[in-house]
Length: 152
Figure 1: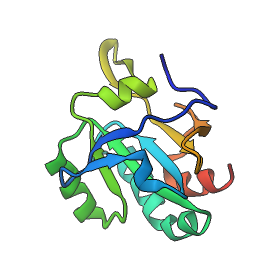
Figure 2: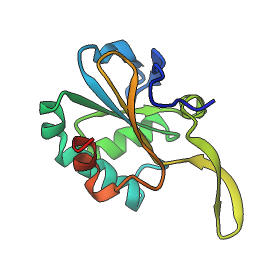
Figure 3: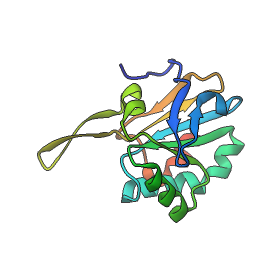
């Protein structure tokens, strides 16, 4: 069952690029932009991460913290963060458990081949831990994602 607007976000989110456990309560008093993306160092995912990096100061002024999630390993996330100077953490959801919980791990198709993958989606979670808004697959503007969040 996918998480919808108005649903509480789970307390345990996973482990970040350093192996540290990440909990929703770590962001108490802040809004959270929890964004799910398919793969480190691909063109769309890099554009999205860099948009969030470039708009990070404005997002923080608006009360947001940013947290990314993909199926990539902690090591891959560390390299991605270093290569692009990302100021936020990334969850290594290698078994896609968090993605399944949020309903963004789904069957995709490319060139007629079907496979399981991440639907690029951002959940905007309020200070109370409840999902306030969702930027759904197909709506995410990778090159302007920070502004897209700020306009919500």
